[in-house]
Length: 141
Image (cartoon, rainbow, N blue to C red; front, side):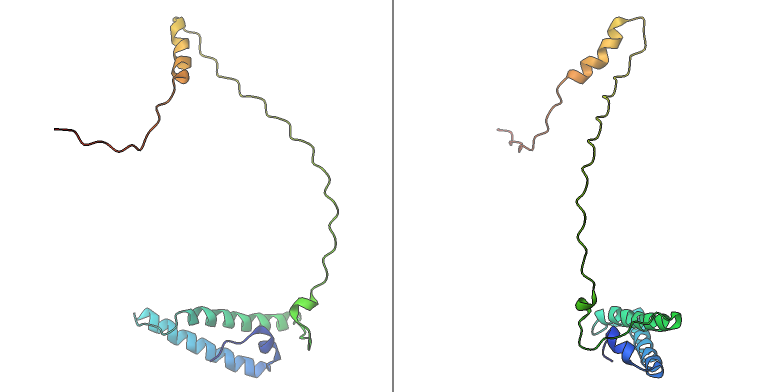
């Protein structure tokens, strides 16, 4: 069975929709069973298309149930139905963000040794060694 577009579904009578929906569900069930048993499917993408088509049928049925069914217009494309976008007003400039205050360095607890407070500063000032990707040379014999 061919995949049906939404406007084609809306044109169908309720009984015809129910019949087509049952056919689609039967086909999907057959493909899913084949896949579950480990068989190969000729077109695996067909499962996805069947699921989407079944969802379209359910959508149209729900729209009718709620009374919000879309009316098909003859000769107009869906793009022509969309209203023109209104121009957006110019955006007002946002005030500049205030800079965050610099984080204060944690004060070292007072200790008996003055040298102990200087050690963390000394460790931070050491340059870090750069890792290189140089090839190791074979040792000469």
